[in-house]
Image (tube, rainbow, N blue to C red; front, side, top):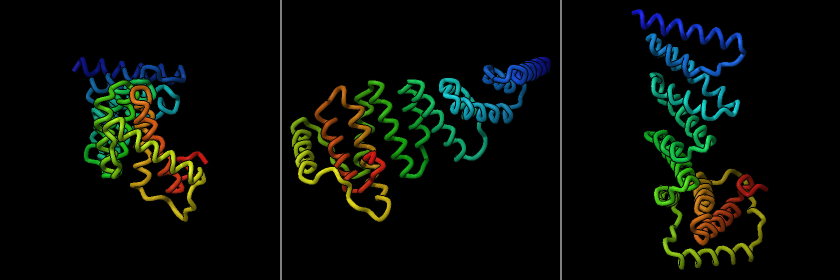
Length: 232
């Protein structure tokens, strides 16, 4: 009982100091003390709110810590938990913690809709590749590409052949997007994004496959008429 009172008093003192200072630099400690006082719901809500504020303030490491606390003690809807999981993954990625971000993206993908699962898996693969975990990142990327019906060139010779074919196609056709009357199919956009992620991630270790993926991403974006991905 005495310990609970002490935790509650410390949390109240930290809150009062934050109001006086105009900033809450010790918010995670407030949450920990609220948990010690048995106020888990308040602690989780406070951490979640603080995580969103920290993210908007570009305090990515703090946002990741606060979202981690909120997720661990979240007892509400699964949809809100997934929102925080994705936000934490983004914060970790922006903080330069690529592997941790990838693991969080994969956890967020569990039990999600098929389209969302593919997108979160793509982001996980991208973070692993950028962080230097090429074998693991490539394995997940290939799963995403297969789900989008994109052929995988496993050998340098096949990658070169595909690259030459795509470059010839681009040279003949030009770089003007195809006219379109609506949004391209989700599967087409998913394939373009996955190819672009692979091209960026593999650029430092496999320049041939990287160039092939980027050429195919460009070709598919032109065919789909997707000006957003073309930057047009």
